[in-house]
Amino acid sequence: MSNWVRAHTNIALIKYWGKENETLIIPKNNSLSLTLDAFYTDTKVTFDKHLTKDELILDGKEQDDSALSKVQRVLEEVRKMADLHLYARVESINHVPTAAGLASSASGLAALAGAASHAAGLDLSDKDLSKLARIGSGSASRSIFGGFAEWVKGHDHDSSYAVPVDDAQWDIGMLFIIVNDAVKEVSSRDGMKRTVETSPFYDGWLKSLDTDLKEIKIAISERDVEKVGRIAERNALKMHATTLGADPPFTYWTAESMTAMNAVRELRKQGYTAYFTMDAGPNVKIICRQSQLSDIKNKLSSMFKEGQLIEAKPGPGLHLID
Ligand code: 2P0
Image 1 (cartoon, rainbow, N blue to C red):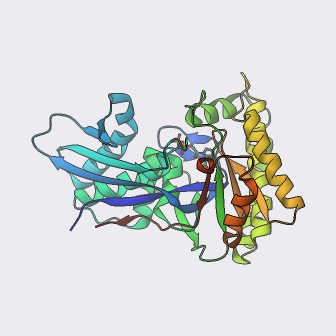
Image 2: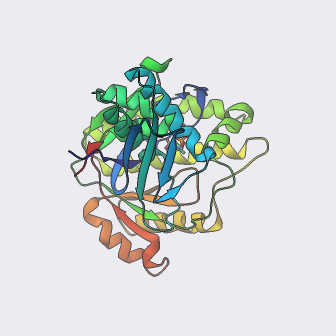
Image 3: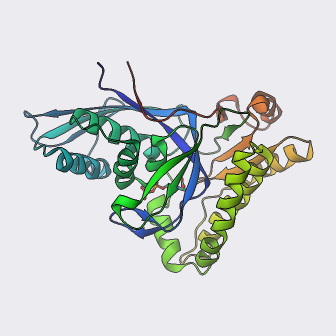
C-alpha cells in the first residue's frame, strides 16, 4: 500500500482571523470553508533510524530550517502520540497551478497530519487528524474534510477542531482570479496578530460573526448559492476592513484586486450569481454556480489572461492515494 496522502486546499467563506492562543493555534472565532478539487498537496512521511534530523523535501527541493518549523510541530506531536523516537523525511508535492500565488499551508499541513500519523502506525479519527493539522496551521484543520467544514474554535487542544457541514454535491463552485503571484508583505500569521492587538475594528468583526455563521449554515442547508455568496462576500469585506484599522495599517488588496471585485459586481448586474471572497493576499475568488463556471470564465476572458482564471469545484477530504 502506498503511503502517500492527499489533502485539498480550502477557502473560508466565514474567515478565521485572529488567535486566542498562539502556541496551540486556538482561534478567536469559528470559521467555515469549502474544500476544493483544483488545488492539493501529496505528502509521504518516512520515519527512519538513519536520519540525524528531520528533512522536508518540497517539490523535489530540500527546504531550510525555517520552512521546517510548522512541519516539526506536527511531527513532534505524532512522535509523542506514537511514543516514537525517530526523525522523519517528509516528501511533499504541491499541485497548485504554476504561479497561482495561493497559500498551500491548508492542504500542506493537512496532508502532513495524515501522512505522519499513518507512517507512525496511528489510526486517528477525523477529529484527531483535524486537531493535529490545526497545530501546524489553523486553516489546515478544515482540509481534513471534503465539502463545507466548520472549525469550531473550542478553548484548548482537545476542543478545537473542524467538523463536516455538508458534502457540497450540488451546484456551487469557485472561479479563482489570480491577479498577483508575488510573496505577500505581511504573512497571514503576522497580519492577524497585528489586527487582534491594534485594530479598533477587531471587536466589531468578532461581534458580527455569530449572525454570519448562523445565516450561512441555513443557506448551505437550503443549497442557496445566492445567499451563501452574499454572506461570504460581506464577511470577507469585514475581515479586510479590520486590517485598515491596524497600527501600522495594512491591506492585502491591490489595484488589480479592486478591478476583479468590480468585475464580479458587473457580473451580478448582468444577472449572474457571483460574489467574491479574498484571503491574506490580492487574489479574488468568485463564488458561483458550478453550472455557470465556464460561462463566467468566458465573460472575464477579455479582462484577464487564460492562466489567471482557474475553475474549482467542491473537493474531497483527506485520503490515501495509489
Ligand atoms: C482562513 N486565513 O480562514 C483565513 C482567512 C487567511 C484569511 O487561515 O497562523 O495559514 O498558520 O494558523 O491558517 C490563513 O492563516 O494561519 C488563514 P496560521 P493560516 O482561511
